Image (cartoon, rainbow, N blue to C red; front, top):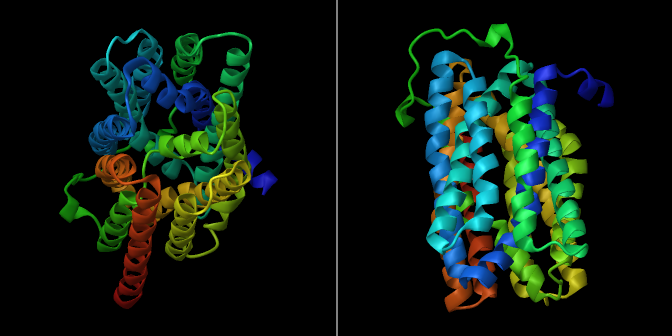
Length: 391
């Protein structure tokens, strides 16, 4: 596998480096935001869910727009330039915000940048390699993304331990953000990708039936997901200190980094839909455990390990399946719908999770998420059978 990884095109490695730098900046402050919001603006779990859900929903809409226009031009660089510039500016400005609504606007600016770059980037990755290597490529990209999520929290923990304030750590993310903008200027798109042929349809009805069945099941599964910030809040309740929270997130990301490439490459050799269905059942068991088991330090660490394995096994496989089910001419649009469905469903998912957490208890929130995941797994089972019959 190492030989296959080393032979991947320059474009794959450059996009991976961009994700590393961007996530180093993003995840340096991500574990700290719940604490910063609570201390500065008295933002609780329910408001946090609304802020994160709204930010991700905004990004999801941008992903469909950018994916459609990528298919028309087969050019990703312009979208990537804007997509990395917005977060580079919005992230450090959070430290200067004077109210929760301003924070919401800045988080939305950060997420809009993600929305503008994600679909063109994913489509470019899928178009750069052969179909039987897409799981490997998306897995490597996620590994480099998680590598940034390791470096960022470790740097944040070091800065906090040396006496920096949370506000100063947030401001410091300007540095890797600027490096991202400079690095994306070096991107050279493969000449063969820059050719648009035929009419590009963006409507839902124009998508292939197997892709629509998968996206429908994915939408239900996304309803079971809440912002990872709630998992960090759960870790805080189990006894982790403010300085240890970034270390826990770094450990989670390190394990996901190590496993994403081999587990995603496995999806090149097995049925991806069956792999995802099994993973969704595992997710349900993990979230049930988050809600029902006594939240000790050891239990929390074990559950974060299991969650990291789940993330590593599914993130690359999900994108490889989209590239497998979509026509080549609709690759950007298909990724746009993928991101739109998952992003829009995160808004009610996070809001509901936060409401259940606040008004009932965290155990109920995790139990509802686990049950919804089981329903989604059953729907994906039916989708697999329908595809086998139609095939």
